[in-house]
Length: 247
Image 1 (spheres, rainbow, N blue to C red):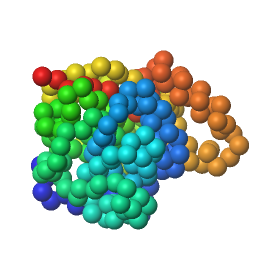
Image 2: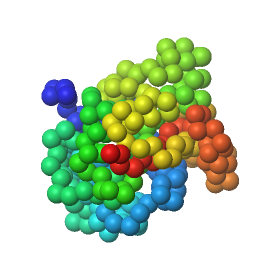
Image 3: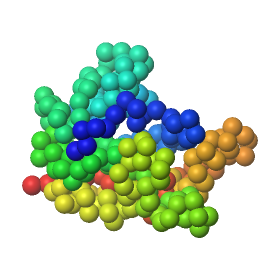
């Protein structure tokens, strides 16, 4: 673990590069919830890496017992302003967090690529935090998304799984594809029950943000991209594994 990391700084946009896009909040978040819903089980939910609470708020429509672990104290403060005392927040590194119980549902979305020792974290989820019969929802940005493959052909990045300078500034350590993500989950002892992709994506986030402000992109088009992603998970914006606790 790199003890010199500044998690409060990693959540901020750089002067020359935006990190959090409307596309993530307005398009990807609803489709992630839609992908998760068939697998949700009753009981508690643990969100690992809650950022500023926007995604957390969507889980509150499905669960009364929500706990979030977040390394950034600034992010937690902003989340508390939105959500008040309806969520139990723990400000800690995943490697150091002490949790009071096991959870029926655990969510880790767009976080594993930030982790210095990902298999170690996944093993802790499997061994210590996931309830027997519980469900673990793991989502990461996809190295093979067409938008990244186009960037390679344009000469903007060297290869599909490259970590760009801007991504590194926000704490990215790697970029996963379905095979490497499943390798990490399996190495940690988790049982991968379902694998899929979320939203076919051929444009960069900043391009999506521009288009979403026009009448070019309709709800029907967004639905089409989501449906197409179910057929071609390796060409999606994000990749998704639903896992259960392994022995």
